[in-house]
Length: 615
Image (tube, rainbow, N blue to C red):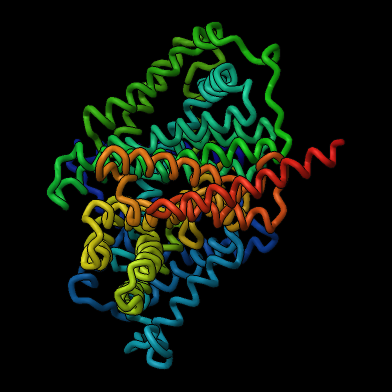
């Protein structure tokens, strides 16, 4: 069984790399997206039910047969699925096969993520079916089970929607890329190099992880793809110096998501945004630079404070590897990284194709290593495929399951109705409108990749802020920040699904930790809407004041959220510091001064208390 498992994961990896690289088209074979995604999720379910069985083996086999029947229908009878899509409904056979796939998928999600996720999915399914009995914005016509299953099985936002598409075309490629790099020795080399550069400081490797994830995320165009690529290196590195698996996974998810707001590329959002609001591309880059820097400043300081709080000691310089010998030992590992950057930025290839081509450079560069055990011979390649595909199974199951929830939300219309409702509810008040638009952006952005999320939010919600006098630049950046926060905010926190699978942490605990680390995405948009100086708008004095107060405010946000400054902060002091941070990002003169005074008093009191205890 072990050998069969190895052969099967190798076959799955080769299939995905071939399809993503579009090799079948060279031979005149076209594989539709739905067929590819059906093969992909069936592969994951086979690996889950066959090689990760529970006590009830008969039940596992029955679920697998059911899933193969439901997913196999899409593969073998795709023309029928297209007819369903054309006519807008399914016959009895279609309803049955949809149910045969949905049930095993829900139970598979329970196995890999616990009961919470399938419970939420079932809630939205039942809500869609019984809308006519529900009050307020939940009220609707209601839909029979066959129509709900149609939305989940045939619709573009269902099981075979964007989340699974990301898993089947991007995440698996970068997990394989990372596994090949790791087998070639790159993981150990990057860890040694990072320790040589930053190990002398507290939490140094985690800080390096934040920077690396930020830079790569800006060019990758996908938070989940970025998390899969850099996470296979950074998460083990953070765990090795004493951070918990939950914290390490959360740091990677938040940093990878932040790449979407980091100039100059912003995951291609910068180019879309410049076209949408009809401004030069450089203007978008300048406006987005400072808020993005504040976002990562909060994450960076949080990592530092958590290291102090957890007692993660800096490594002694005598224990650190020497920089030059480390670099010379593994310089060849930079070749596939450079190739990936070239394919993504200069050649501008899609992330999946770029990752696939970069895998080839990993194979070739491995033979430059002095350690022959690191050469990627066929046995080592198979082992790498095995590692990468096994990490991907959980991600594939969860993303396909989340698609069922998104399909029901699209059918019921609750998402759009809720967005309109919260905007109207504000009654013209700017602060309330921002709060409601932010919440709506978070909900609408769930399950969407970065680019479609931006397009959807720019169409539906940004105009509400613009009507109240907010600049187009600020309004669009506002919805981007809140919408992308859904990548690490439960329940559809796709980046967290990826990093939790790598770290071996619990998804919900990691999601909660990620929200604390990524609190900047919720606070900074309020700051730059109320204080345009953060977008480099205004005279030099306004900009300088905005930069100064926002940097101080960002630092205090990290202190308040982590609950640590010179020592562990009492609850009352944390509240005072957080209030002070909000005052510091408020426009004007008196509010920031008051915030500075409050923060100074709280931190001085703690400093004096700690000194008194020591003496």
